[in-house]
Length: 206
Image 1 (cartoon, helix red, strand yellow):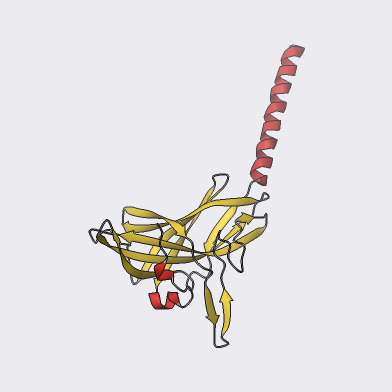
Image 2 (cartoon, one colour):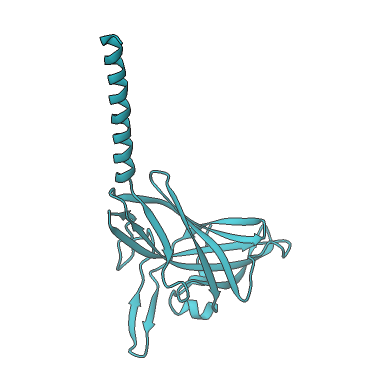
């Protein structure tokens, strides 16, 4: 084998090794997000809102309040780009919901009467910054509110089983990476929700 061919093969080999090392470093360095509902049996709620109107047609409105935690186990900090909720309306169809701004929820803790204030994901309030930048080895938490509105045939309603609604919560970071988790919503009354978010029945998503 000629010296020129040996040099060309050596250069090709070094290029492959270098590319593999760069890929390995990139995969190790990238953010790795995990998302989960916080205390899934306690904080995930759905409730019926007062009826609305759309083009002079009476609508059926539902509210969804989810409390989620998002952790970054990677080596690069990352910001969230979006967080959506997907509600099934039939075994084969679902609707995509965008979050709606709300005041920071406040609820009393036990018999002490102390008040706990909850952050809202991605929303600056009186007590929390609402930052969606997640440092390596860190996490953020927050509540998110969604409104689903339907009109026409009753088949376009959320699928409800034993007063619960199963949905998918999906986040996307600024690099386009996606992570999702299942959320099981339990039914609560609008009056109870109003005790932690005053005026929620008047909030509109459009």
